[in-house]
Length: 299
Image (cartoon, rainbow, N blue to C red):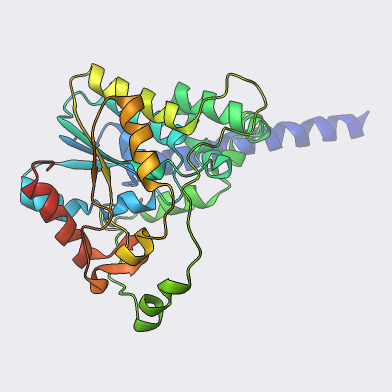
């Protein structure tokens, strides 16, 4: 009988420890200046909303704010898929009515990334949309986090948020690295590159949305709120852009689905010193690009 009591006591202790530890980590995440923490803690109000994946980080916020005098918020993250981005954008637009314009790089619609989606599990207490998406895409991870609150915080994204709990600028993720001559010269050896934007999600049901359908729903929601929406193709290193075999077809498909023109800047920045790699501008290159957006009235 005593053994049963000890077992019950240990179970109770583990449960209390899990809930107490989860609460402590929850408070840490809420206090962070990480962009998604700010989204949900009410401190992310801005006039310009920026949307993308790692290529969306070239919307260099300090410079945009310098040349526009407007506050910015960027939902971009490395490997960000459009279905997750739609959750964050819809949550943002519901919470912050101050948004005047949204700029979105359509080349983010090149992947499904369910593994990354699960990494944002610790934000589910603040978003029904995010909870639903994670439950649909990563059911085991979702229910594991419901059972164990500590489990929610077991991932790289929470650790990144901790960095901004003790300070730091979340708007300065862009690198100053420059491609070396070896990289620039070897672009000719690169194989043809395809944007995988017509993939369905990994569920077999016939109602699964195409990636571009998710984009169309995101854009429609923004337009319904009378937000000025700009769809762009951010720059690639031009010799690499020539390797992309379906960029024009993606552009046409996006325009058909959204009813908006896509402004193509894929080859607009030609200086090799403006790139950190074939797909990403550095800070110098970003300034060149953002000057073009300013000149064209997008910023």
